[in-house]
Amino acid sequence: MTETSHGSVGTHFESFSRLVPARRVPYAEADLLAIARAMDRPDTPGDGPDAEENLYVPAGYTYLGQFVDHDLTLDTTSNLNPDSPSPTTNLRTPSLDLDCLYGSGPADQTFLYESDGATLRIGRTFDDASKDDLLRNTTPGGGVDPHGRAIIGDKRNDENSIVCQIQLAMIKFHNAVVAELHGEHHHPPGFNLFKSARQEVQWSYQRMIVEDYLKRIIEADVYDRFFASWADKADEAYVLYPPQSRHLIPLEFAAAAYRFGHSMVRVGYRLNTQTALPVFDFKGEAAHSLTGFQPLPGSHVIDDWGRFFPAADNQVLWPGVLIPKNIGQPQVKLSDGGRPAVRLQFAYKIDPNLTGPLGDLPLRITGFDGGVPAPLTPENKGPALSLLNLRRGNKFLLASGQRVAARCGAAGDAGPPSDMTIADLQIRQPAGDQWTFSPFPAGLQHSTPLWLFILAEAQRKIVRAWTGAPSNGQPVAEEFFLEGEGAVTQLGPVGGRLLLETFFGLLDADTSSYFYAPSTWQPLVMKGKIGPLTFSRMLEWTGLPLSDAFGV
Picture 1 (cartoon, one colour):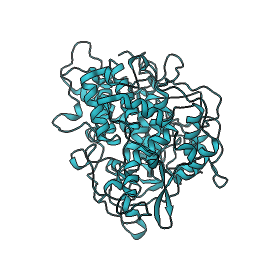
Picture 2 (cartoon, rainbow, N blue to C red; picture 1 turned 90 degrees about the vertical axis):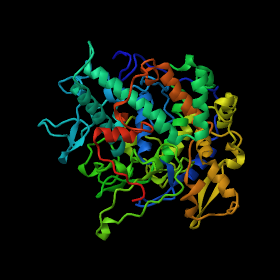
Picture 3 (cartoon, rainbow, N blue to C red; picture 1 turned 135 degrees about the vertical axis):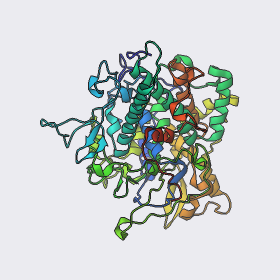
Picture 4 (cartoon, rainbow, N blue to C red; picture 1 turned 120 degrees about the vertical axis):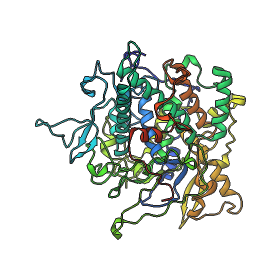
């Protein structure tokens, strides 16, 4: 691998590929507006078990997924406004190479590295020099600029206080690998510390995505059948993403399937014993929310990663293991004189509902790259992410979920066919102090926007449990969503298939990926360990605190 082949940007603007032919006619704006209004669900942050939580996915994976997205796509000619006339282009290399971490390497971007040319630099929080932050712009006097932007390979990894600290954790992981390799007594001729460390970090990261991240968010039948077919048939296992297309990221992935993570965003998060805040509020100030693009306050530093990721040795929480019930206990509130325990928070369910703050995005986020689109309703100050996503897919004339499902149905033994019906296209709505489901607008039932279809597909088992005995389609209490099938969602045959083919296809296309690592390679983080290579393994090996906090 050369530094020129894996850098912070490509050598020229690249477009996205299209896996399924485009629609000829866009969806009606009235239908998109109606479903967007139904998708946005007000909520309030709190400690303790939450009926919105998805017991397959601890909360940290929402932002790990955001970090991975930023490794693959960077559209600098567009902004959050789907009406922008600019064509969509990608300035990221279509590979999982961590260019968002390394930039174009120490030879080009020396300011990202220490004098040894291998160790990545970090900074300190502006209000507490004892705590770590990303490297940031400084004042003329050399102090941290209180408005300073992060000096990193991808500015978007400073979008909120959690993805900022995922980036920081990956920097620390790289630096720990550098220290480990530097301390070895025997190195082969031509050994290069930076390149050797980067290779170890990239291979570990890629394997973690395959063994940990994807297995948590994709249904086991979808994952296992594709993996078995891929292992046996190689490129013949693909029906969507053939080798000749893998120099480009699929538009269906970037503009629809991989946006599933927006539904996983919680209304708020506890970062430490003192701080629990909403992820966004319209002001976008650190004192009121976790909105980024500003220095990380010392009060936002995560004191224990067990709040976001499971302990690596707790097999109950290994990827894809079904947890029958959220056994977490409500935490003592600071206002009552207590100190909240370290409790594992879970991501919200993958479904057609987005939490309240995403319906009123702050100007610091929407205006960061350009124009500010209109709010969803007159009551909101900022735009709603639900409508932005639907209108973006409409702008690109993405094929409907039903058409992509038909294409996936040709997969044969490489994956189960979609079993979605019109009856599954439902959205959860309040019914007094209970909950019910309502059908999508008639204009979206036979031909459904791909992003919306994928979210409904992930929710279909909950809808079917609701329509069956004993609920029989009647309103249910929140307890319905706290255990059993009501408590879990994962991507199904269409959403899961799009992600599997994209991620495996990119790794297949990159001869420097871990798919081509020597059979003798053993990840540093897995020496003496069993089980999957999880992000928790990487955090623990780096020396970051991570308690076994499920059920506390």
